[in-house]
Image: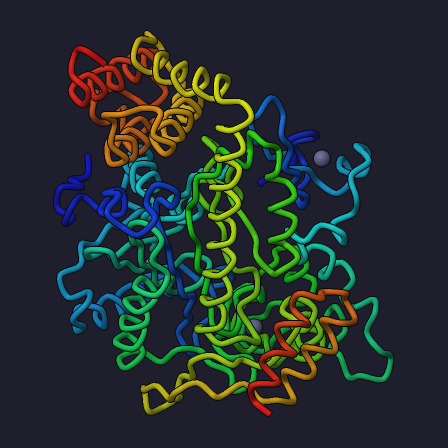
Length: 360
Length: 165
Ligand SMILES: [Zn+2]
Ligand SMILES: [Zn+2]
């Protein structure tokens, strides 16, 4: 088992619900795609070239301020549970963790992480710089990753084209290489059935959405990751500014949807959120998906002041620690163990009980 | 990700539906999606790459000196065919080897081919401040936005041009 306690805050600082608008926005993520000049990309390079890339970048990173004390995880030397654990913490992509259908980990696949910053190595691109902040914090998150980019850029030669900008393995990332995403909870828009319209509108203004775990993942628990679709033809500032404005608008729509629900169907909403709470509090077996959907209901209830005594931090904690690899690790069983739903329900009950006391 | 229907072909269409107040996403290949009566990916903003890749090489003007599909990048050995299949290029040199079709692809993906963000100064290993977006680039983007009926973007570009002028 890997020791995640080596990381400051265990790599889950983003769930502390301390950031701006944290009742709606869980976290803000920035990633920059970079490749080393003169080297073949991941799809066509060899094991020894990937090893060399890892060593070159790590040496440069140890020379920076921001990653000097970074913890290194070699995904290619971890077992599947540990890789899944890192993925559930949003520290590595599904691809890097080798959790795709073929289940293979690429040799050299690694992660350097220090505080809120990290670099994935030998992912689709040689380097994927990333920063994860609590709440809605595009500017702060970008500023940090930008500093890391500058530090690494002074020590490494990046592939850059005078017209196209930073070159990437997939042309969808060319230019700035920037993908900014905001993980937002939108139960009001889902309940009022406005969500499709909102998502369509976002597509029209050049934004896209994904599920809880990023690329190719399902939407669970009404969590959506909103991000920029294009990376070329606008400056980083313009991309962030545009995304920020649109997210603010979506937040307004969500608040309006909640007001409509409370005005037009108060009894239904009240029943719905308390029912979710009741199930979490007393159920004896919970699948991950069911837990996520019930947590979404309770989160809505807390957000509109129907459910007192439950903190957003507790809800975020439940979100992370009820995930299969996390729960399995803390219970000392395998993620595929048939007992997992029972353990999950026990865990949720225990956390809620200690939060609200016996009376709740 | 493979198609949830046939579990054979690559899923290129991601259909989001709301059933019983739950959002679900259906991942389908082009064929299964067509069987279900879903529009081709051309109409789906989530997967622009698939269509563009499929169209690449077919719509290129005859007179442009484009490498034939069989030609390979001298640096990495990859071909346009490899790119179409994997969606990934083999190396930075590919951007030169397949410049014409890639420029076309970039324009269609991003509405522009001009990087306007931070610039990496090659050799010196240091940064230069980003170029100010040039009015000509913005005008080109505006033309494209109007052409594709992306009026919201068009309005924004118009505002930006007004500020610059
Ligand atoms: Zn299929
Ligand atoms: Zn190449």
